[in-house]
Length: 387
Image (cartoon, rainbow, N blue to C red; front, side, top):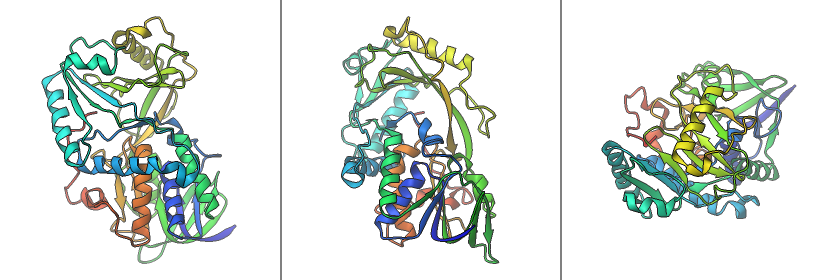
């Protein structure tokens, strides 16, 4: 089967759907989105923890969050779907002077970019924000009340439904297996498992598998999958829905309330690479449960629902920042990759920015720090991120 599309978006997760939605709003027609999954939300979007924050240590990430937040506030009006943005805050807990220094350095950047509401907390103020935790060894904290939670699958649904109303076609169970290029390196055809699509422009929004797709066009994209895990307790009314996302910086353990349970996360050291298994490790579950019971007394005696625990994939770039733009060796491929765990929260902003680039509009944000060539130029985005 052979078809034609002005733009083919490879990847129907939340970033690909956001780009398609924003392109359609700009009046672009003949857009097709292809994805190997059988239905929406089967990839990384469906595994996202649903956090939203602007507490980053680099200007570009703070500004992406602020753009995304404004778009989330308009999301229902724009798509008809509630994105679930719930500003209950992020609470970062420091146990060493170096962690406290990182908080303070980050807040300088955050306030410079307009996040005026972020503040540092003394130890005596912490329990007023989260009274459920132990603060033994904690010497200070950061809190931003406009950080909080979002609903990844509802954001995906909003973009999918809006894009479809605007004429975008979504092709599920269509894995990209090849890209045909001309003598100038331009992509002329996308080959999937059951069709070929003649194209003018390709958007690589393939998440953890973006490097594999880029290689089909001769582009070396430094994005690798990284497995991350999440555990859930049994239903636990002692953890209120409005508890802020709470992060213990000493080990990276963090937790939130989600659907009446406590969701527990811990970025255990793991080498990036294509994983063999996306089940949560039993030993990891035991370890994160022990951390939770030590740090959150109300969870002592609360069981873990092991059937709900899972692993998902981040798409990591070398500097933990997104790669957005056109690579030097393929002028009609637009990259929207490497968000490094922040893809869902930044998808409203990235979708708009990539659409602007494709239709030759000047974006509202200077995204040159995210240009694909920065690694060849030895100019990565530099920062000591919080976690």
